[in-house]
Every structure is written in C-alpha cells, then in structure tokens.
Image 1 (spheres, rainbow, N blue to C red):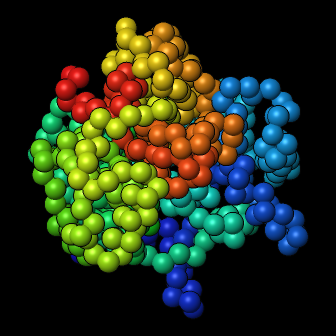
Image 2 (cartoon, rainbow, N blue to C red; image 1 turned 180 degrees about the horizontal axis):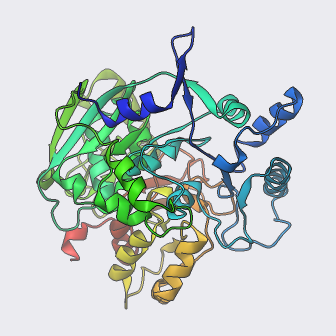
Length: 464
C-alpha cells in the first residue's frame, strides 16, 4: 500500500496506541530553551525522575537574550533568572547546552538544522510553536506544552493524535521578487489561519522542489500560523547536501541517505485533501491586519469587509481599528517607522544576503529605525566574514547579537507606542513586537530592506 512520509515516520516511531485513542510516539530529538522548560524540570524533581535520553536533548537560549549587551548578569532580573535556571537544569541532567560562551547559541529552530541535529525521518519536539520549521527536512516536528516536555524528558515519548494530511502542491516558477515568505503568506491567506486545523501540510510541486533548504524552512516555519499541526517537505538531494559535513551529521552518511530516501511519500500515495497553486500567480505579499492570514498582494487595495464571512468581518473590523487603515486604501506607500530583519522565519544567512544586496551602497530613510539580528552566532560570524554587517551598518541599520529579538519582544528590543514595523518575522498579533499599540507588517526580507530605504511599503519588483 502506498504511504505518505507522515505514515512512514509515524509508524516507525509508534510505541503503542493508548486507551485514549492517542498514539505514544518515540521522540528522536527534543529541543529545549529557557522559556518553556523550567516548569517541566521542576516536575521531574518532584516526581523523582531523571532525563531518559539526555543524548537526544539539546538546549539553547534565544527568547530572553538581549541582542545589544549580553554581559552577565543580564539587566533584566527575570531574564537572568531564566538563564540561570536553564544552566542549572542542563548541568544537573547532563544535557548539551549551546550557551552564549559556546559560539553556537541562537534561535532553537535555526541552531538545530545548522548543527545537523535535524534530519529526515525524525520525530522532533520543542516547547515552541515554530518547531514546524524542522519539517523542511522531511521530519515530523511539532510544538508542545509543558506537560509534554516533562513526558519526553522522563520517557522519550509523548501522546499525540495523528492528523489528516493535506498536500499543497505549487507548480510553475516563481516570478522576480517572489520569495518563500510570499508563498507561505499566500497559502495562509487562501486557506485561512484556521484552515489547517486537524491537518499536517505536505508541501510539494516544482516550485517547492526548486527552493533552497533555508527557503523550505521559512515555509514550514509558518505552517502553524495556518493552523496546521506541522508541515514538511519530502527529503531530496537539496536536503542531503545541506546536512552533509555539519557537526552532528551521521558518520556513515551514504547509509543515512539511503534510509532518508525511503521516508519520502510514495508517488501514488493518497491524501485527505489537496490544494493547488500556480507558482507564477504568487506576488510579493504584505500583511495588513492582526493575523498572518490578513495578507494581500502588495499592489492590491485593502479588502472590503462586506465580502467576508461574519467571523472574518469581525476580525477585519478589529484589524482596521488597530492598524488605522481603511478598506480600499493601498498598502503600498504605507509609511513605516521600524525595519526588523531577523527571527526563526527569516533570520538566516540567505535572508541577510538578499536584504544586503538591496541596501548595499544606499541609506535607509532617516526616520526609520533599522535592526538586523542574525538567527545564530554561526550566522553572525558568516555574515561578518562576508562583510554583510558593514553593508548594513553603513546603510544605517543596527547590527545586533543573535536571538529572537523583536519577533516577540521578550527582551529589550520592542516597538515604541504605535510604531509601524516592516518585519521579516512570523506573527503580527496585537502587542507581538512589544507595544500594545504597535503595528506589524509581515513581509519578505527583501521587502523589509526595500521598505527601510524608502521609508514606506514598496513593491520589491520595482527595485530589481
């Protein structure tokens, strides 16, 4: 019987089906960070339990890390306390910790792939919703809660229900100025922020296969924003080439590749649902509202709520009130105050290269506060070796240390008052970037760079 990658990986890691109807899955890689793990470790101590597979568990610190001054102790007492807790827990339970002195610290969903920890056919869990990023490698990767972190630490397994699967096939070639961020914003706009509930997304088709691994990570990263439990891409030569030579890549790499290839979905596998998009129809996208589904092509007018469902109208009304926009107006030309390049969605070296190519030799608008935050220390070193840091600083951007930064603002990097941010991050919820009245416009890194130069939202196709 033909099977999907989801079927194969699920069956390979299935321990048993529980009386509740959920499956108990063995988790191959458990990633932890400072925000969601302390309570789980306290539960272990209370229960007198240890960590079952410390060699499969890896930690980093990302959410609370300051990106300007990383001297200890941190000025923020809560951030310092969370850092100290993670240090204590990883030391006590023998878990590898990519801390600030390791040279390998960074955002958890960037560190795992760049270290070669993330591999095809794995089950991967982390107490963070954007764990779906790792599905780009043909793994089943999902975010979990505190009690599930405890379960995995104690047993190496967790209970989960198997979702249905929707194949999203994107054929044809992308046009100039269209990036992975535009693909995923288009998908979420089309299917809705709740459209993926109960589903996993398998991304396939000519346009997906042509993407780099970093671009595939951007798409899988935001699967959760469309309501999907996780998303994945079938592993191929692009996947294997990315992993080869990385610190935790298998020593017998040829044998590993043969095994990884066997996980790919069979050509005649069947799906619960399928959605098709012509890659040539995708344009540069920008969000205009308060969730990632409120997105539109940069050259289109803001939508009229009268054509929406009742639920959509209510959300649109809140969005228009918060954003200060009006239906029918153009998103292009909207003035911005902040340009943020970073996050687990678009803080990788290819993102920085794309943005640097646009700003090289130019200056950002005088009123714009520009910030570049590499996703990891490794990316920062690579960017500095290529001279990207100098391109950005000469253009007027601030060059910061690695971390989540202004994506969610659990650190000093925040919007001020009602500022409008052109952001390469993943969420535009009210208050997400640190100010209750702040406003976030999600877009590709190239679009953020172009907006920073112009001081307003622009169509990147006009700058190429």
